[in-house]
Amino acid sequence: QVQLVESGGGLVQPGGSLRLSCAASGSIFSINVMGWYRQSPGKERELVATITSRGRTNYADSVKGRFTISRDNAKNTVYLQMNSLKPEDTAVYYCNADVLSVTYSDYWGQGTQVTVSS
Image 1 (tube, helix red, strand yellow):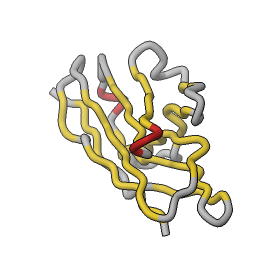
Image 2 (image 1 turned 30 degrees about the vertical axis):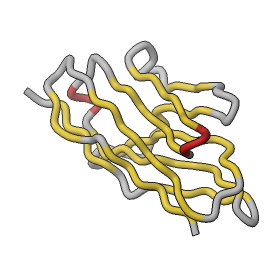
Image 3 (image 1 turned 180 degrees about the horizontal axis):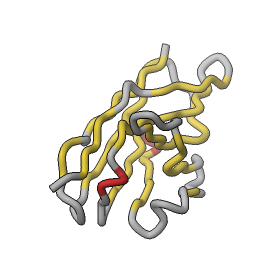
Image 4 (image 1 turned 135 degrees about the horizontal axis):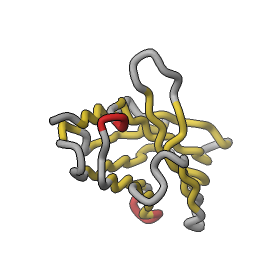
């Protein structure tokens, strides 16, 4: 079995920064794409950013220039550096990973709350 454990969420003022981390553990041979998604109350879960094992990144237009996704393949960990945070960034942030164990399977973390408010 594979587990994704997120950390780093919290309360921050507008314009502030937070760094999320997500570590994958368990029966892992390799990880293809890792990413971050978010969901606000009453809204569908949406893509924030993804990164391939070779470092190719993709961002939602709403976070381009403010958020940076990175990963440490040796540690099976993905990070999301969030700068210039806005109230509309408030959401539960979920980590996602496409993991090769016996076969490729999609895994999700439990979510971490990010609240941007003064």
